[in-house]
Length: 346
Image (cartoon, rainbow, N blue to C red; front, side, top):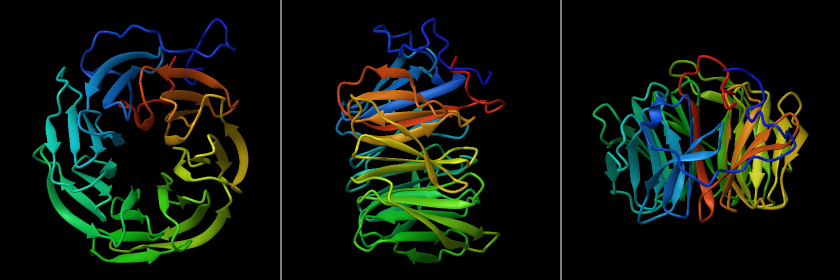
């Protein structure tokens, strides 16, 4: 695995698109790089990230997919949809979910894992964030945090002891899992919090709302049994339209935001100045974003049904992943070995 261009093509100006054929399906967990996408066509597709070939399609009947996440060890994929949490085993050729939890009343908007894979968290339109025990490989709800409005997003602090919950009334809840206490933050009243991200070093937290504004706080504290302290740092007028996603790069040097304006914006965390805009004529709403581990490339999921690989340095599209029939709303990307920078997309 090297840091070279992931698309090594004869014509470097040409955007690589997905070959029409599908590769033979096999255990996804044997792949060094896992890329999964999903949305409104009721399928989850896995891709050979370096070639753009769709290697496997999982069916997700009954609803769209709102959120995807790969477990830290790369063995499981969790998918949140309408009234469902489904989990798929990536170590086998089984195309059916090994867990199908139906005990939720509304949309599951976000799913995520604790760093050791001991538990999973979700947030949903039933106004709750939940923690699920995964020890027995079936879902058992351990704890529930009740908000007063539908929950759009949940983010786990790198300290693994604080869940940050964003709801549609504009409240950010910081739930301390050690003492079960919570604090509230309201950056902009009655303005829905769409996405929250904390950088890998636990230095910054960002939240984007449905007006396109992005708020950034500096974090301190957050030691054992101690809640993080938030210090307002920046209010970025990131987008003029509905904000959708924000995410810090793995090296903490960049913050990216996306919105209904069809543009992904890249901000430098040193001073939160704009350094790059990623867009193309076909791109529509960008609902989800993923980074390669070396922070050199970005993957986006757009409602034009296409996922795209971008160079952060040049702003160029390096590859397009095309096979879905409807809007893409979720992606999951992981280098399961994590031993070297992930741009073994070459």
